[in-house]
Every structure is written in structure tokens, then in C-alpha cells.
Amino acid sequence: MRRPFIAGNWKMHMTTSEASGLASELVAACREIDGVDIAVAPPFTALAAVGKAFAGSSIGLGAQNMHWEDKGAFTGEIAAAMLTDVGCRYVILGHSERRQFFGETDEGVNRKVLAAFKHKLIPIVCVGESEEERDRGVTFVIVDRQVTGALKNVAASQMANVVVAYEPIWAIGTGRTATPAQAQEVHQTIRAKLAGLFGNEAAAGVRILYGGSVMPENAAEFVSLEGVDGALVGGASLKVDAFTGIVTETARVKATAR
Ligand code: 13P
Image (tube, rainbow, N blue to C red; front, side, top):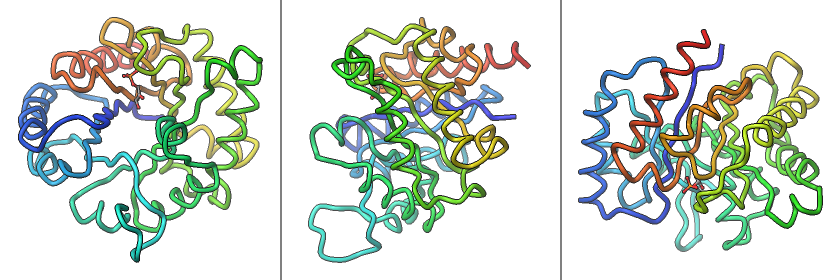
């Protein structure tokens, strides 16, 4: 049984004081919610402050990126051990904004995934097609390539600690979500691919999240789908009520499904 998972990606938002405030509000708001794993990925500069606010709560701390090397002359980069040192449990890897604006490749994402395992971080591996790719009918080709590339040399036994996030690029920050049918067919394709690479049992244990304009109002549409195990939330994760609403909806829908 896969535990539902809602992760917030704060992207490049929040000073440390804003971050601490929001994190404390989230701890209070999510205290009573059961049956859903929750994580938040603030910017690097706010990790320590948010980690402090989350201490003793069940909300996990995540980072939005990292470098694959353990240490060295890599100006501006952050290593996995630095993330675990401030209390991170998760790291988002291969987000489409990193691929689009910072030249991340499948190979680079793969190196980072392997580094994450080495340091006992749970990678949240992002995949998803652009609008142009969807229009050309190559969505499955793209997602297949991204999944295969990111998970090269990963052992089947490690797959229980991988989270995959399907985020169609055209749905990110646009208010335009995939239809439930579109999301579900890509989720099914990803799980089938994982089964081909790692076997049915390993694939059945991987949590696959949907991301792209998820709000409290539409969260249930996605998380009620078979094979959609939660959401990776951008804009709505910056507001305590919206993020808590998504977590609450997920808890409600998944409890009913059990
Ligand atoms: P939005 O929820 O703002 O569309 O962002 C999704 C996302 O990119 C999360 O990683």
C-alpha cells in the first residue's frame, strides 16, 4: 500500500522570516491530518529556519536541487551532505524549470539521483512534456526517456525510496491542469515503464505524484485516480490554507478509497 504524499515546492519564494512564519502555520494546520505524508521544499537559504519550525512535527523537509559531487570547487552549488546536515529528507531533482532554464539533462539528473541514495535522501524525480511535445504526440516518448535516463543504474531494491512526479510543463503555474484522463494515462505509462525496468513489485511500491496547477478545488480529481499517489504543489503551497486544503482533500479521498 503506497502512502499518499503531498509535497510543496516553494521555488524561489520566501525570505527566512517569511518561511519560518509559513512553516509554523503549516505545522499547526496539518497537526490533525492523518494518513498523508507531507513535505515542503523551501529555497536553500530557508532550509535551516523551516527545519527548525518542522522539528517534532511530521512534515518532512526537502530541497529543490543539489549537485551530484560530495564536495569540491563547484561555486554556487550545494552538496547532498549539506542537505542532510540541515535535516532534509527529500530532494526534488530534474524539475522542468531546471531542465528548461539551467540546462539540466537526464544524465545530470541520474547522477544526482545516485548521489541522493548515497546520502539517504529520497529523490523526487520530475518528468513531463512541453506543450509542443504533447501537440506532436511524443508525450510518452519524452516521459519514457526521462524516467529511463534518471533511473539508470538504480537497483530495484532502491525503488521504494524513489518518488516520481509527473508535471506536464504546460500545466505548471498556468492554472490549466491536465485532464484526469491525461494524467492517468501518463501515470500508467510511467508505472508500466518502471515495471519493465525494475519488476512489478518494485514498480507497485513507487509513489507517482501529479503536479501542475493543483489547488484545493481540483486536488480530489487527481488524487482519486488509481495510480496517482499525491501531488507536487507549486503556487498553492505558498498559502497555508490552500496547501492544507490539498492535504485535507487527499486524506479524505484516500481514506474513502481504502
Ligand atoms: P504550480 O502548482 O504552481 O503549477 O507548480 C507546479 C510545480 O512546478 C511544482 O513543482
